[in-house]
Image (cartoon, rainbow, N blue to C red):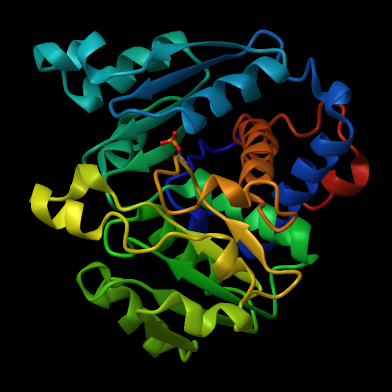
Amino acid sequence: MNKLRHMMNPLDFSVDELEALFDVANDIEKNMDAYSHKCDGKIMATCFYEPSTRTRLSFETAMLRLGGKCLGFADAGSSSAAKGESVADTIRVISCFADICAMRHPKEGAPMVAASKSLIPVINAGDGGHQHPTQTLTDLLTIRSLHGSLKNFTIGLCGDLKFGRTVHSLINALTRYEGIHFIFISPNELRVPDYITEMLDSKGISYEEVVKLDDVMPRLDFLYMTRVQKERFFNEEDYIRLKNFYILDKEKMALAKEKMFILHPLPRVNEISVEIDDDERAAYFKQVQYGLYVRMALILTLLDMTDAHMNHELLRKF
Ligand code: CP
């Protein structure tokens, strides 16, 4: 029997394993129907202690598209967490019902605690301001699909770089690829944490920190916009002062390369004007679609079901 495997951090998978995962995701993109019975009889639990639209529904759609079924809860208040049940006990219970679990929790490390007690694969669907690995897999697959590889580009990360877990996860994951230059664009109060710049320094990876978006726009191949994370602010006044610091509009887009893609983990608040949505470079809804493909590929991988009917060329990589 294969060892139980979880997804807590994108770095849990080697670069080669991620390439294989993305190949499966791209195959799903082209041949969705061929995957529609791969998880017949399997059940996914989605245990969300924090709000979500994309991640939870994307996991549930992924399992349904694979022929499996889903159960779960969408807020802690409707689970026995409201009565004081621990995450460790909850996952032991879920292990009796489901074959795989995706968990989002406001406390950093909670999905890791769950994984340590679980009898089924656990996927971290976001833990506090820490990690959001499947958003990172989504971002990497989107970049690879649009750029052709995960090497040699300049990416600007803009907005709330302090609290944005998707940003922290993505930077960490991209450090394993060659030729990437990071430009961090944020107000001083929302700078990327020191542990990240220290990590980049220790690896000799090039980056810049700037406040003005306009100055760096012409150099970017990707612009990763983020919202200011209201739920992680201690002070409402600070949030109000910073929430509209960046608004990407047509005027700013006129400064960008013809092939600069805009990414955003979503939800968006005001940081991207809706007038940009029809711009060919706006890739954030396409990104959501890639999120479905990569979660389907991840479910198959963690359930060790990549061999059911899969393209044998892809399989050899696992
Ligand atoms: N990108 C993302 O995590 O969105 P949700 O919070 O809606 O799941």
